[in-house]
Amino acid sequence: MNNEDIWEHLKSRRPVSIALKTRKNESLMVVEACNMEICFLNETAGFILNLCDESHTLENICDELLEEYDVSKEELTDDLVKVIRYMQWKRIIKLC
Image 1 (cartoon, one colour):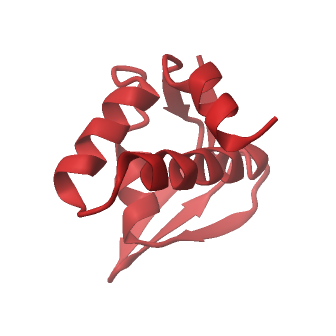
Image 2 (cartoon, one colour; image 1 turned 135 degrees about the horizontal axis):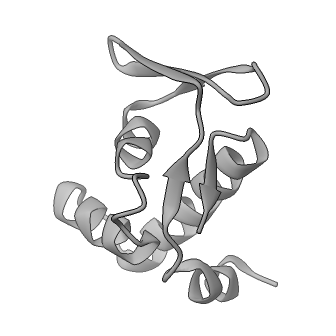
C-alpha cells in the first residue's frame, strides 16, 4: 500500500495527542511519549501535534499546512502520512 492509498484511508480520522508532556524549546518541541520515551519534533511536526486535539481531521490539518507552506498537496500528504505514522509508532498520538 503506498502513501496515497494510506492518505485516502486516514484523511477523515481525527488524531489525538497522547503525549505525557510537551515543551517548546526554541525551534524544537520536546515530547514525552506515553511509553516514557523523549522525542524531539521539528517546528512543522510540533505545529501538527498542536492540531492533534480531536477537533481536526487529518484533512483539516493538511488544509492548514497548505495555507502555511508553499508545497504541493501531493507532497504535503505524503509527508503528513510519514509524520503521523512516526507519531503513532512513537506513541505520541492515536487516531480516532
